[in-house]
Length: 126
Image (tube, rainbow, N blue to C red; front, side):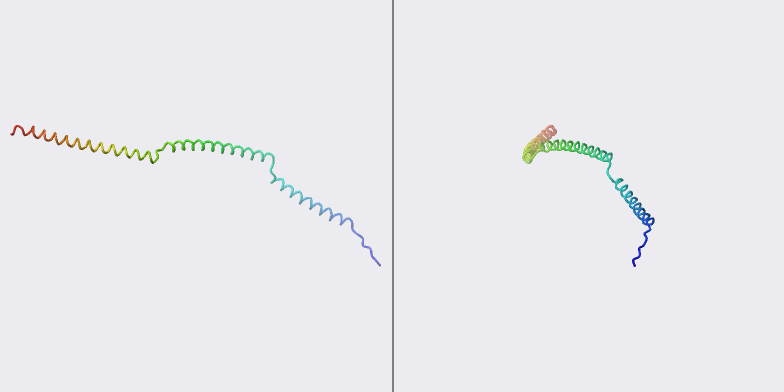
């Protein structure tokens, strides 16, 4: 004969409710942790404001660098090149030649004055 076992519905109800309760606790903890990490509107706006500030600072710095590069470019364009330096050396050589001529002329004058001075000093002795 087939025997029918009697189910204890109260015990089954308890275990089903215990599993459902545990499931609710687990899903509550998981949901709480996920929402803690989720970006809020305030945090997004704060990041957006900071990004905007950094972009403005970057634009100002880039504009200042462009200005500095333009000034530097102007200064470099006005520097003498090899041709200008070559002309300067030629002029220095010409001045050196003239200075050597003047030194030679002054030396000749000194010798002439020495001769005249010697003559005048020794004239009475003769």
